[in-house]
Image (cartoon, rainbow over all chains, first blue to last red; front, side):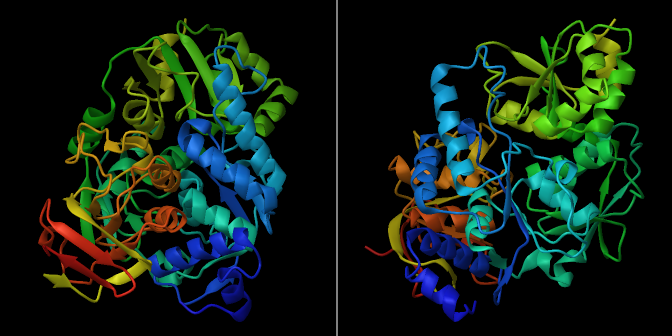
Length: 383
Length: 135
């Protein structure tokens, strides 16, 4: 990869340690993705905000980095571990460390969005705009449905872009990688968002490329799209899908393959708690939930995760109140994945409709999961 | 044996015993940085420690925060000495760049399986080569 003279100087440390570190990261990812040069980015979305994900090592790194780092472009940040307005049950130790991380990001100039769905919270740039999104569901969603151009960035590569305003021109930022070589053919009956989640997980696992064609999917509503993008981002390397395409190689996804994903991730039939929101729920999903639970009460504890912005909008239009009447509890700024609200000490198993949520509940939190679609959850667990 | 013409992703030299898997690794969900071990019972390297090894795997999967998990391995003194991927990805490259772990990926046509388990190996990233089985 060729660097411009000012980039080279920054890499050598002439502009301080922060930029030297950032350029070292950009050069490494540029080499990995075969880039020839760096290009400007308009927006970075950074992950690595939840203390449960980055730990003390990450916290200390950010504390030091943020003493002299300043974001050079619009930078939004992923959810943290909990909702600061509802700290009950969250260990003091966790709260303090989480606060430390949040302040580091805010000191660098982050918008305190704490959302994994920046595409539902912020104004969107024009199609074709180069961005750097670390949150994998947001990367897949933005490439596939919004026409933005991002690679499936890491927490650190997006951070490097946020302080330099640069990213390698490679992979999904070039047209070539956006034309899939492999297609998933499906005769599966997609009746629920969970079905699309299973497809996304399967496709991500089966295809090692950056982009995959989904031949049997013609259109998606937002709820289905979010389920699919999040699951695809979890299981593999794909950062994009297309509706159909010219791919010659085909892999089939049917009942058997869907069941195999269920067998891997759905390890319980029932549980004491329901979590909704990975990705965090948007207004559409809250409306659906309100409709499904109207005049009913949840028979299990139910936590609904959404961003503060979406929650505030839902309060304004009376939607949050309707959902709270069903007995569900909102938690803002956080999500199902690796939250200290849902731990093995407190629960054996969790009910969720999120394939991504199921993966992290099972692999990281070591909890069993009952995967069910949102309508089934509302039918079985409200009365 | 010397495997040359590797791609240099993060410079430097590191040596240790090879720890080889054909399965991708999710560093966030399935690696315990404090212990340096793989925690996923379904993974070939379950319970194995990556500390001081030449870690050989195809690429990472899953969370973008995996890059911090690689950095944390280093912070806790449990990092591999060097990393070899079949195709290095952004998570591996960025995490190792921050943690100063040398990374190369293999030239086209050389499969991961050409590196056997538990052999002494040295990754010389700047020379774009891996030296295996020296004494």
